[in-house]
Amino acid sequence: MPAVGGVPAGGVGKAYPGNLTPFVTVTCIVAAMGGLIFGYDIGISGGVTSMNPFLLKFFPSVYRKKMADKSTNQYCQYDSQTLTMFTSSLYLAALLASLVASTVTRKFGRKLSMLFGGVLFFAGAILNGFAQKVWMLIVGRILLGFGIGFTNQSVPLYLSEMAPYKYRGALNIGFQLSITIGILVASVLNYFFAKIKGGWGWRLSLGGALVPALIITVGSLVLPDTPNSMIERGQRDEARAKLQRVRGIADVDEEFNDLVAASEASAQVEHPWRKLLERKYRPHLSMAILIPFFQQLTGINVIMFYAPVLFNTIGFGDDASLMSAVITGIVNVGATLVSIYGVDKWGRRFLFLEGGVQMLICQAVVAAAIGAKFGINGNPGELPKWYAIVVVVFICTYVAGFAWSWGPLGWLVPSEIFPLEIRSAAQSINVSVNMFFTFIVAQIFLTMLCHLKFGLFIFFAFFVLIMSIFVYFFLPETKGIPIEEMNQIWRNHWYWSRFVTDEEYRNGGNVQMGKTV
Ligand code: BGC
Image 1 (cartoon, rainbow, N blue to C red):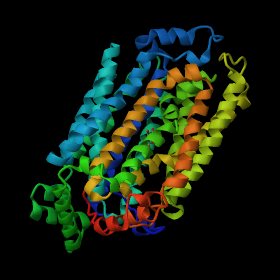
Image 2 (image 1 turned 60 degrees about the vertical axis):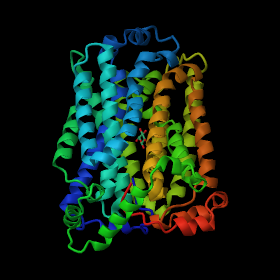
Image 3 (image 1 turned 90 degrees about the horizontal axis):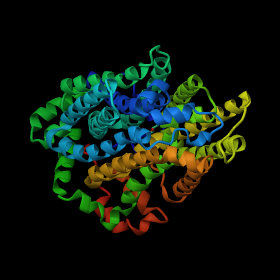
Image 4 (image 1 turned 120 degrees about the horizontal axis):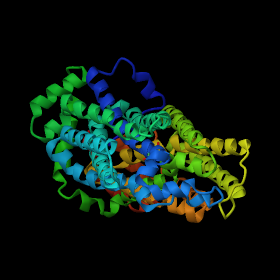
């Protein structure tokens, strides 16, 4: 998923209007749909798991615990392995599918992966919407997960191959923006569907995934192949014509030649996975593992998946809990816009560090607030209004901190630091590590809340501290550096320079990055 590394401050905004051809516009819409699918899933599960009719039907023991005398330990009311499995099964499935999708995408083209993704997602939404038994729910979630694995792997790739070079940074975070919009739409729908008399609103919430599924399925059928994919499959003349149409100009020679060169260079690398283990790629491999790991260890998905459950646990009514999820959803979208605005002005490191400090403070305050009221035994007594407001304000400030730092940058930075010859393999690692830790956090959160209690927030705060120190010492600034020149950031770095020597730089520094992922 390549992105702009060298766009000068403000450059993206200035060149944006007027220059986008209809082809590229369609590309943006498809990318947005891919993000919506992912975001819709992230946002929907927390809401339905706090709806009583849903719990009563599928997870009656959780329902009974929730309904029991309020003096029982609030921290543990949602602790159920099957309930957790419902949320997290999707991410394990997505992890597996994204590995398979990388081969499908390479051999059969990006469109086919998108189509697979849409169809699987469609099937999962139907199964979930009509679910009668827990297994139908879980199998449905797994199908949705497979769908996401395919679309998340292929859509950003399609996007980056279609996008004009100078728009890549903005388009990259645009994908994250659509994830946040998907999350928001899901929470708003949950809020309204929960009110449906008869208690079947959860079916609409889950079945609503049909809409983005249909859009991506149809989209994948009508979209053109990327010129890059055509070159890879030997259709050079068609690819040149396509590129002329996409760019809206006749003279595409330079870019076309770069595409061909890039495609030839990447075809020569027989074992990208093995290559990734070479010493000179140590900084890249480290980032491909650590960035997604840290992104998930911010604890953001505790809020994204379980906001209503969490708010419910700390004393909000069911309705107020769903409303609070809508509020965090709005903050999430708004703060992502701030990131789009500032990423090429203030740089990645500034956003990472500022976001880190902000999250750390908020986590400490939330831990203290919950600890003070609920103590160790989880029995809050009467909760005053000001208390609820303080908790919501700090959780929102925490979400904003994430949404302009680790959220978008967790995807953007890896995409701009991998050289072409290892990009595909490194990106697969990035996606699967992300999915793996999303799964782990989803899987253990409710148990952790039950056992660690308010200490849960301290747990994630600890990781935020570690990752901020890591960024300070180990992550070089990538703002304003052309992708072809990216090797210099390692060569000039106090630590990473021991892996990327001057000689390596001369050999590898001028690799033409082209458009291949
Ligand atoms: C993360 C997701 C998270 C979302 C929240 C993404 O960057 O990968 O795990 O739920 O941001 O907006």
